[in-house]
Length: 282
Image (cartoon, rainbow, N blue to C red; front, top):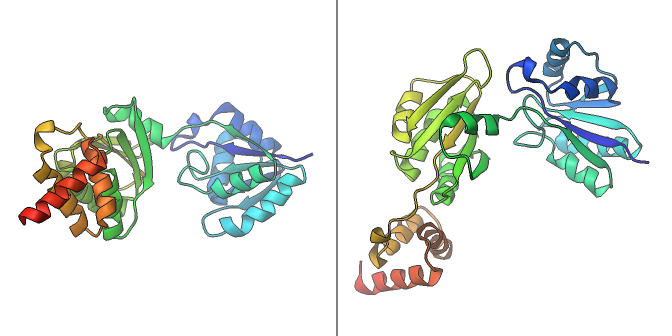
């Protein structure tokens, strides 16, 4: 009989937000796999619980190597509790590899639901929450970051990103460049902690604010793209948007597909607009 993998959500700030089951699972676990064993120790002390089993590290640097070991432990019948520094394991944190391996071996996977920086930031942002998409961390290199943002430029759902404080100003500036400086957004800092702050406003203003330096855990929520204005979508505008993407390094086929999605028109219409523009020399 195989064991059980428990993905245990941990507080994103205030230890008092820990779900009641978390302490019980930590106490009964055969193995606790923690992203940071020191943070786990502080959490268990705050919860007044003594870990019931062996504690091992499981972080980005050893995730690939340790996954087979933990999978065998699970296959042998153990109860393994996986915790990360904050929030739910595998959501921009270690865990996905172990979940996939456990599922492949027929191991039961369950979860202790807990606080989520994504949902908390959405709730307090003041932006639409009926439809959203989580984009995780953007690439560190500027070119790759801009490329990823261009992919999302026409997304109408609210966008949620994680970002480190020392890259926040560059990221907000890039968002203002790609999405437009007037696009509304919210920077949520240190959620549920003592110095919690939510800064709301247009991306251009937020980029200027962040230029002075920001500290803490950051979640950025960005308003989705507005529906295209039919008055703007003549053939010349469609061709211009494709040209902008091509100049940024996209292949024409991908640029045409992206513009068609943004504009809500068939790809053939965009293609014809590009051909017509070439024929007229525009």
